[in-house]
Amino acid sequence: MKFTLKYLVFRLFTVNVLAAPTSSVTEPDPANFVNVTLNGQKFIDKGMVAFGLIPAAFQDSTGNTFGGVGSAIAIERGTWTQNDDGSYSGSLIVQPDRGFNVDGTVNYQGRQHIVDFVLTPYYDTIPLSFNASQQTLALNYRSSLLYTERQGKTTTGLDSLAIRSPEQVGLIMDPSDPIANTTFNHLCLDAEGLALNADGTFWVSDEYGPYVHLFDSQGDLVLSIQPPEAILPFQQGSKSSTPVLNFTSSEDPTTGRAANQGFEGLTQDPLGTKLFVLLQSATIQDGGADKGTSQNTRLFVYNVTGSTSIPVLIAEYVVPLPQDSSNGHTFAQSEFHYLTDTQFLILARDGKGNGDGSGNEKSKYKNIDLFDISQATNIANTGFDEPSNPIANNGTIVKGITPAQYQPFISMIDSTQLGRFGLHNGKPINSSLLNSKWESLAVAPVGDPDFPDDYFIFTVSDNDFLTTTGVTNGVPYNAGLNVDTQFMVWRATLPSIQPGSVETSIGI
Image (cartoon, rainbow, N blue to C red; front, side):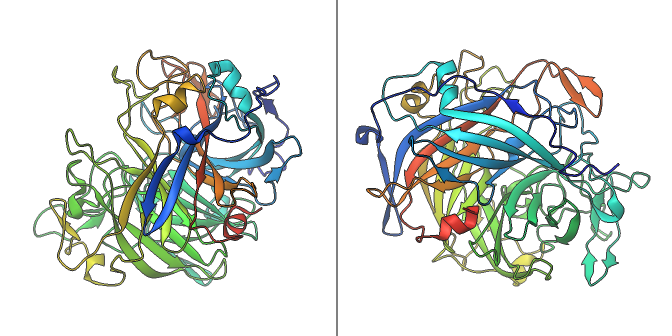
C-alpha cells in the first residue's frame, strides 16, 4: 500500500509544554565570540542559542520508531517567521537514514518528517537546567512522507547484495541501481542529504551508490545521478578479472567510495540550478582505506536546470578534511551547506558521544567549519574521474591540484556553550550527554537590523534509532539503551551570504 502525505498527518506530538525561559538579555555575549577569517572575510561564532529533543521511544505516524532524522534537515519553504515576542517559528523537514541497523540492516522505507518548531533564543550566561533548556526550541511532530521508486515499489534500507541493470524510463536512463537481492528487487536507499526545490520536488543523496536521487512532491522517484567511475564501488576479483560493481556497505571495495562513506553532504544554490554533492571522506584509491590518509574528499557540482533535465557534471574539487592531532585520523564530514558558489559551511566530527557505546564517549571534534573553493582546481571530466588515477597518494595530494581552503569555525563541544543548556561532553553517560552523531545543517536569518549578517544555524543528531522500546514494521526491538534525538541552534555572523540568497535557498 502506498502511504501518501495526506494519509500520514493524523498523529501529532508535542515534546514541550512549558513556557520558554525568560531573560532580559536579548543579544549574545561578545566575551564568548570566536572570530575566524576565510578569504579575507570575518566570520563570528556567537554561541549556542537553543536546544530541544524528541524522546527515543517516540513513534511516527506509520507506527515505526522515529529516529535517525539528523541525517538531513531543511527548513520547509515559506514557514520561517519572526514573531512579535522575539521568538521564531517554522517547520523542519527531517530525513532519517536506513533505519535501525546496529544488528544488521532492515527493510525500512525511506521517508521524511515535518517537525514544527518555536525557537526562543537564549542569550543569558546564567546556565539553564537540562529540562528548562528544552523550552528554548519547542518541537511538534506533524506528518511523514514515504519514498517510492519505479513501479510504485517501496525503497528499502536493506544492504545492497545485488545490482539492477540500467533501465530506460521514458527519456531518462536509470543507472545500475543497488537493490536488496534478486528476489527483492527494491532500490536500496541510505538517505543522507536533502535539498528542497521550489516546485515541491527534492533531491536525496545516498550512501549505497553513492547516488543522488530526485523525487517528486509525492515521494516518487524521478531520476538518479550516478557519479564518475572513480567514485563507484568497484570490486576486483582477481588481477585478470574485470572489476564489478558491489554496492554493499559491509566491506570496502577495491576502488571508489569506502563502505558507509558515500554522499553524506548535499546542498544547492538559491535558484536550484546547481547541486553540490560531497563525499564523506576519500575514495579507496585516494587513501580512504585508512583513517590516517582519508582526509582528501571530493566535491561535485551538477547543473540541474529544470527539475527533469539530465544533470551535467560541471565542476569537481578536492576538499581536505581536518585530522586528529593525536593519531592522525580524519574527522569525516557529515553535511555541508551553501553560502555562495565558492563558500560553504561543513560539519566534520568524530563518532564519540551519547550512543557510541565505547565507554569513552568524550568527543574531541564536532565542528561546523568553513571551506572555500575559489582558488581550488576544477578536476571534473579529467583522468581523475577514472579509478586508476587517484587525486592523492597516501594522503598527499598529487602535484597540480590545489585543494579548497579549510577553516575551523564553531566548536559544538565548547564546554561553556554546552553548560549554558545543561549539556556536557564526556562522562557521566546520561541523557544530557551530547549525542555522538550530528549530520545536518540548516540556516535561517536572525533578522536583526543591527547585525544584518547574523544567521541561526540548526543542526540535529542522528540517534541511530536507539531505544529499548523500538518498532520496525510492526516488529519490536530493544537496542539496549535510549538515545533521544537532540536539536541544537547556534548564532553566527556569515558575511559571505548575499542579501536574499539564504531566504531563497531555505524557502522563506
